[in-house]
Length: 158
Image (tube, rainbow, N blue to C red; front, side, top):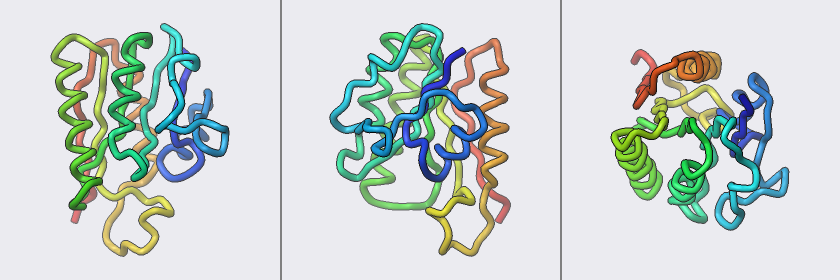
């Protein structure tokens, strides 16, 4: 199975790309989730890890989700269950609704909702964090399942 991951140069995306390899798509590789078409990078044997987020278009991740399900058989979306407010929370909540809707319609779409993950994005946060190893193991679990997996939510122990 071929892996395609957006946002592969930092944080969760970098950890996943370093572990799984595959095709990394981000601004550093010339791919913009707001303006570029994901379809030329996908085929039926692709697992698309929909990770990248941008405040330029907070709903671009949802656009990529709907584009990708036209071709791929498996999509893993990286959501959030952090206590943030505002547009970030709104966009991640909308991603959750879209993933759930597509899952209930029979698509192999998994939403992974993590609390604060130990990445440079969370450097200033001093509370408990989820390790990137936990993120990797969660994705490995989803990929190992012959059944469809809907939503997995993980938060650090407080």
